[in-house]
Amino acid sequence: MQLIVLLGLGFTVVSCRGPSVSRISEAQKRTVDVVFEIDLNQEVYQASSYGKPPQMAVWIANPDDQSIRTVMVTYHAGACDWGGQVERAVALPYWVSYYNRQTGTSGPPTKEHPAPDAVTYATPKTHLTVVTRVPEGSCWNYFIEVNVSGDFNADFPKQPKNGHTDRDGNGQPSLVYGGSIEAVREAVSQPTVLGHTDQYEPTSKLTEGTGGLTTALELLKSMKVFCR
Image 1 (spheres, helix red, strand yellow):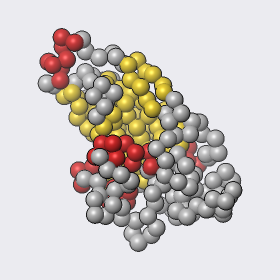
Image 2 (cartoon, helix red, strand yellow; image 1 turned 45 degrees about the vertical axis):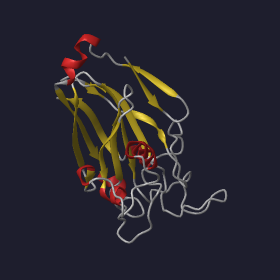
Image 3 (tube, helix red, strand yellow; image 1 turned 30 degrees about the vertical axis):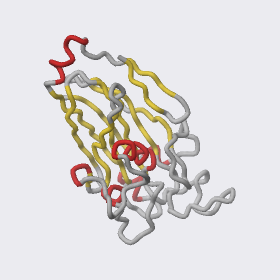
């Protein structure tokens, strides 16, 4: 079996050994927990213009049946509740593109139609652990998107650039990490950078690489994805 991770500009194919055909039905009767453990760098986001923790989303996608599952999304983005401040459509746009496919919707969640409470989490300040249960032996692509507002730098400035205005106060765009994992106990996967989105407009495509990003690369101290 092979997993295909969509990068926006192309595909990365990662091998993933699954159960034999004769064992699929039996294996899918059992389940495995996929665990995401993420440590945040508090000093980095506190140094941004607003000093607020980043918005985050974690989701998985099954390349066999094309199913998508949001594991978690932070409250502000998931409930469209920005505390009276401007709504930030560019906060987690890559997750939104998958969420739309998952739910048959268009655009980010709204106050009238928020993401389900079951996947909406308080914004973590130092650490996040989330768990999702999947059939044993199944293979998944996983994604982690993170974005802190107001982390401007020379390449992603606060002032207008090339006719664009950062009306959402975004600064450096969201950064997306990802990988693949087979749902067998004790499996471990290390997320890697897939790319970033856009400072000014929500997009469903990723720009490969990390050009121009500085502190955004330091937001997450460590990440670990494993099965138990």
